[in-house]
Length: 361
Ligand code: OGA
Ligand code: NI
Image (spheres, rainbow, N blue to C red):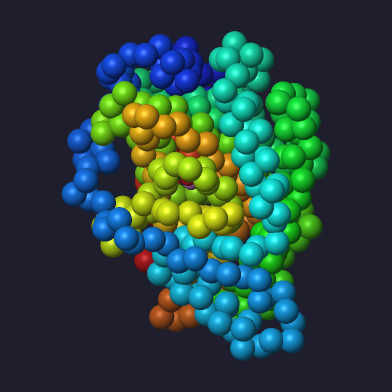
């Protein structure tokens, strides 16, 4: 592919918020998905289905081995069979979750003009954006977003973060710190569950030098939600994703056995999912699972996706202990920087990126 990411967007950016607020009664053709990708009711699982909800509080209690084992087992089952779960009692104050979500909601409610100062470009993606991928004429998703770097520290630049509403930077800073702590805990749990040393995954991620970034998604009201998607089906390219969902509006759907399950978030839960890099490190014992977002005609939605990633320039490859004669290494080593370039060029494409990585056998 010859697309040069140093360029600007291939065509003028249209804010989905503007389309939504213009009161148009039809979705412009750029946002209309082919029939097979639309949120067709026949592909949606029974509304009573949900991804697992796991209370991880007991893992902090060193003295209770049986409780710790139960939590490990629940996480193991969720990673193997779902690629997605919700954690509760994760240690992050509910008030902080509500406040940071509210602050970002208020940011997106500002006029488009006020946010243009943060407009992003496809070189770094940092800032206020309305598309992923630089293919001219691509069918777009019904959402705007804000993308920022949290770690490594030298990439974190508060001047690129929103200055309003009040305290949004402080709250985002504190939220990031808390999620990074939870990320470290979960990498331990996953390492133990894979039969690796407790510190294996953290180490493979670059130890102290992990990467972390935040993508805040804003899904405006949509006049014809049955024709489009807020976010096309994709798996997350990074390590682990921690999603703070909207507390009032559902929208995230997770693929399970050829059906789409609409996630019903528990109060103050954080949704965790396995990204492509953990699929690679685990030699596909854990799989990054496809998910997508549907939109509504009468409700907007906000979510905060925090990506906990390997250091971007170290090779990521299957753990040696998980390579056997029966199960050779499924992926060649590749840095996260190299990997991410695929996605940033082509936009969300299901799981084609990680699948394309498979070594010929
Ligand atoms: C993402 C994502 C889901 C949501 O940003 O990668 O999957 O509910 N978001 O917004
Ligand atoms: Ni995602």
